[in-house]
Length: 369
Image (cartoon, rainbow, N blue to C red; front, top):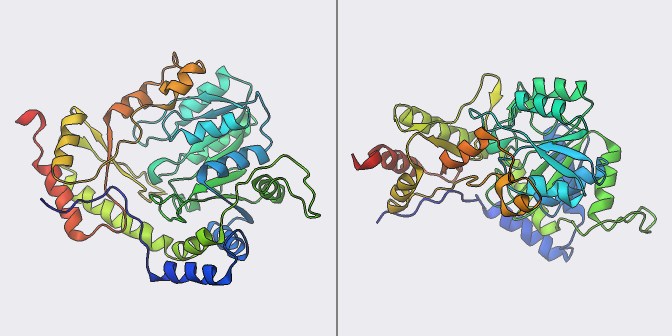
């Protein structure tokens, strides 16, 4: 049996190990100067004025929405095709998620569905969009719509570190962008997250919220949380950030190889990269034209890692059914949930690994033909 090829594998080098040892030897292993350095470097990389490091991508979403002023009962438009943390962060703030459908070509929330939602639910105050799988949303029409309807944009960039839309980085279009540094992401700190913004007040409020609401005089001036990143995590992140463009280039190289060698396979559709976009391929996600389960069994039998993101749209999750969303229907998202499968594209993938993945897919015979 050939060696297993995982769906994700972080690239950890001696540089990360040495930086972590520097922190451990200092004795300052909680939050501190390394976290501040990562914030400064990440803000500089993104071209934003400020950044606030947090304990996870989920807490980054939570504090960004709260710092943006989301009040209990206010409505936030978002996508049903994402990890559940996206919409849960709205609930954490007491907000009310409103879902709308996706573009099945890009998997991202579609401007047409956004416009329809704004017209049907005029109370919507915020749009929490997700740049899914490493591809930016179609931001020009989305920004025009949000300006027309006076809606504030928050960007969930957990899967899109470094992705570009007509030369501008995902996460820099709205009031705030949020990122995850989970081990599967384009860069990692183990766990961890980041809020970025050009709004100094939002970053200040985010830092208050992530650290028990402690003001500069040491008093607690608002209700906050313990959402701090540690220096140990930041040490890893500092090294990872230096190589983020390299990692993304490798992901794009792997994706290009798949597109070259799988473009004629009749039972799958390959991910798209519209003109003017730079896809960073957090995932390389296929759309199946034939039943998915036998294909997954074929990958498994050949020791090829895979993952279905996401088999159940958020509005059909048991929690959201209990909250009253079960009767909602979003045909494109529901169809994609039944058809998508992601294959390994991470930067640790070797040439022989790519060849094996392609060979395995090309050998598959739908229906046992």
